[in-house]
Image (cartoon, rainbow, N blue to C red; front, side, top):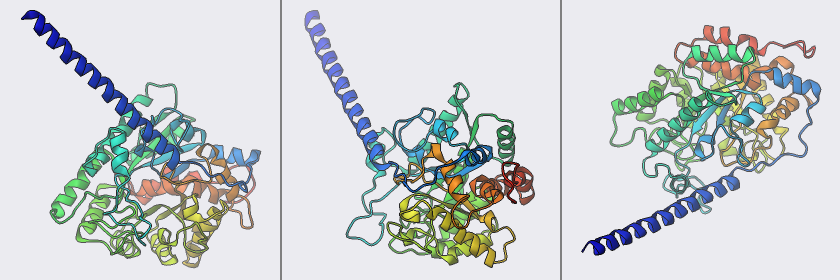
Length: 444
């Protein structure tokens, strides 16, 4: 009897071991496929006509407080603290590109733009669902997908304190921002990270009321989120999207979500929102808002997509809030040439000047969209190329304006809207970041 029991135990053990080996091989296979998908979706497409930085360009870039309004790196299962051989960004490469402040935006759902449709439908197959499955992340709940990425960032930030590389630090308040600026000026190797939501797709809806919406926004705030975009590429319960199928304005839940975001000290990001939603949001909110990553419709040549980019009316409404527009450098945002980045920025400053803005460059920033399934034309480790092209061309920006665009304006935005922030605090913390230096003789 005992012999039979031992044989049975052995058989069960063998089956379990075989199943475990099969499972681990299966999981490893899925993980490998996720990595291959990452490689495919996040290549670089360097423009051969991009300028080559000279010694002065590199010195200026190294002296600046550089801030980027949008990357999607948390979507991918790469270690933030390790330099990766693929993808666009990680802490070592951000540090090499002299990024001081980086917004890490959280994507939870990305429906396919099916070839027979002229819009992106929320009911289309979602690419994030199989990706989440392959990476061993939450699959069903969009909310769980978001909070998983939040915790992933926090774990990396905590672990960065025990490594030899740069510190990754969560920025939640205006005092955190003040300390970051001071530490960077002291030469400390630290990168500030602001957590953002790109599409609050699980917030609101038919079964929710305004109290539910506020509670969800409070939960995001408590978790450390300080930037909130109601929409991504498709219409949802908060607003229509500029690529959606109906493109309506803000819903009742949308107004409730943005009111809560503003009250809690989150910057409101109107990237991807419909023009109707942007018009309503800018009229409704009293704090500066941002469009974290976009291009402009003026001069939008293929493969640039007009629907994804900002009209002149959109730009004027953002400027009227004293807001900031992050210009990206992937072809769908700006077109086939990296020099179009400067053109798009100058278009915004021209509109601001015509509106009577005393400092027209205060409304322009950078929003790379690294790791956003796009093909940037500037590598993060060579962001001095962007500094260089802004200083060259037919209408070069003066040094002070370059400093604003590359980071001071984004600093001002968060210095105004973060908990404890105000226009006065923003000026105190960020005001000196755009001042010209002895690097060249240009006026700010």
